[in-house]
Length: 335
Ligand SMILES: [Zn+2]
Image 1: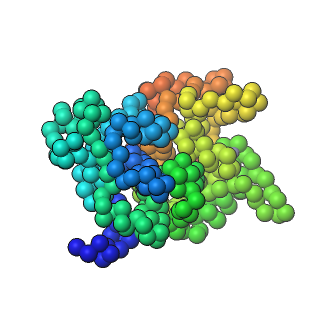
Image 2: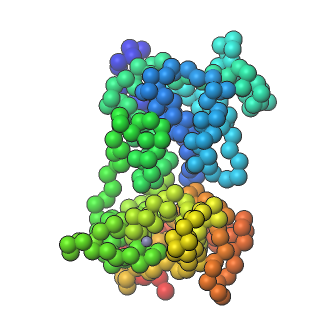
């Protein structure tokens, strides 16, 4: 096929297809991170090929910041992205395709350290020279697995900050207006309600379940948060339990005493409810956030009398699935 005949939409579709083996709505950030890292290297003038031995340390550092669960095996995305040969190839020293080798071989770290080389596919490299294609591909990778508030920093992290502007897809314009009205322009975690020249300042309408993972632009998937708590919520330092009490990750460390006190005070506190007539975040969205973004385990609540939350046995995991939220923009508040 003529290399120039494949447009940006085709490359976007190929990039999206890397999610085909992931488990339902679960986040799968590692292959997108590998591609973002490889595209960033290419843009910095490095070759499209890199040995697993040379890549492992840097990829571990990058992926550790987005780790899901207890363990991280950088070799998995490095090898299994190779099943998308239009994008990435992973080969042994003799040129054979490692992704097609028996599992015990392709998952052997010593073998990969000695033999494996990953490479952005040649046609993909040519396509990425076009700034429009690069921007569409990179923004698709960001949107697939990362909350919008993290996009700019992630671009900097992979060395693409000066080349690609973050372009989040359009959301329903009513979402922000309705969420901020429902919470009366207050952060549902700390109550911050700053006004600058008669306009609310530093208050966001945050999504609970990511839009790219079927989280709707709907009041039952929204919460008003100050920009600080929005960022911590998206990064997984803060979360919510099935009673909509605030969770603080045990991995969130704040050394400054005043700031630490302010943050730890939140653990176990109920979030502020929306005003009458609007629904709070629906439990399926809250559970999605807990399982896909919150960095577990949660700290025990600091306030006396709050129920203790055991690491690994969080009550949210035992809550029955609530019915799917309606698509109405507003509704009666639950009691
Ligand atoms: Zn706040």
